[in-house]
Amino acid sequence: QERLVESGGGLVQAGGSMSLSCAASGRSFSGYTRGWFRQAPGKEREFVAAITWTGGVTSYADSVKGRFTMSSDNAKNTVYLQMNSLKSEDTAVYYCAVLIQGRWGSWGQGTQVTVSS
Image (cartoon, rainbow, N blue to C red):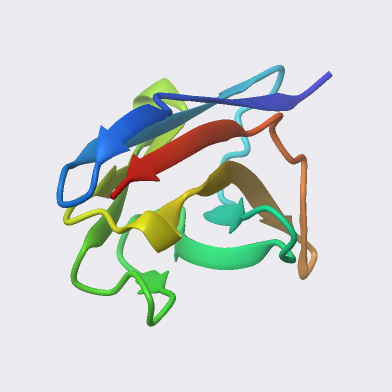
């Protein structure tokens, strides 16, 4: 069964950096756009970033533009999210997902990122 596994979360001070990884197992998700989302306590899950399979196109939420960078290593079936200049409002559970037939799915279990101010 295919699944995505996020890793790399933890506690960081405001202004610091953190890198998240999302590895796929069970299937390669070859050809699919991958994305990162996050959900803060009491809020709905929101889009953070996405990258096409070729890595040629990436998109970001306005709130993270210029601070976060998404990349991929298709040989490892893994995507990454480099987060710099972190703010307290970046505190959330971060999830990765795959865009299949116009819908995001195959959600991972999430990884907690906590930014202390």
